[in-house]
Length: 277
Image (cartoon, rainbow, N blue to C red; front, side, top):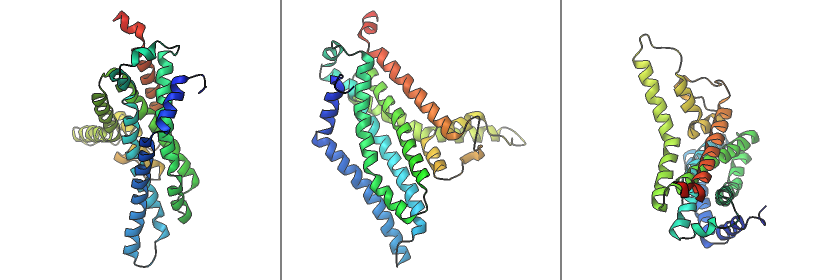
C-alpha cells in the first residue's frame, strides 16, 4: 500500500528522516522521563529511606495523564498544517492533479502524522515498565490505557485535518485545532458540571438522577475516561454503565466523529466541488 501511494511514502520519509522528528522524540521522552524520575525522587525524599512500591499506582496515573496532555498538544500540531501548508507552499493544486483522490491525500497525511504519534507513544513503554516492575498496576490496565490513547489520537488528528482543510493559513488552523482539543479535554467536563448544578439547583427537592447530557459529556471526556480506566469512580454521581459501558461510548463517539471529519475534509478538498462553488 505504501509503495502504491507516493504521497504517503514521501510524507513518511520526510517526517521520520528529518532532524525535527528526532528532536521532538527526544524532548517528548525527556519531559515524560523527567516527570517520572522527579516524582520518584520527591517520594524517596519523603520516605527518607527507599522508594515505596505502593506509590507506583500514583506514578502510573500521573504518567498517563501527563502523556494524554502531551498527546493533545502534539497530535493536532502535526496534522493542523498538513493541507494548509500545501496551500501556503502553492503545491496543493499540483498534488490534486495526481491520480490520488482527495480521500487518498487526506488518508496519506493522516497516516503519516499518526505513525509518528504512535512512535512517541511506543517509545514511552520502557517508562511504563518501571511502574510494572514495582507492581500495583495490571497489564490489562496498561493495554487499556494504550488503546485509549489510540482512540483519542484518532479524533485529535481528525480535528487537525479538518481545520487544515477548512482554513487557508496554518497558524489559524493550528490555533483552532488546539482550541477544539482543549474544549474536548476540559470544556466538556466544565459544561457537564454547569448543567449538573443548574439541573439540581432549580428543582426542590433535588432529583436523584443525573441528566443524560451530563452522563454523555462525562463519558466522552478523555481525562475522566482515563481516570475511570485507572480505577477511579465517575464524577457527579453518574452511573458506571449507561446504555453502554463508558469505554464503549467513548470509543464509538470518537471513531464516528473522527471518521465524519475525515469524510468532510475529503469532500471539501475535492476540486470538482470547489469549481461548482
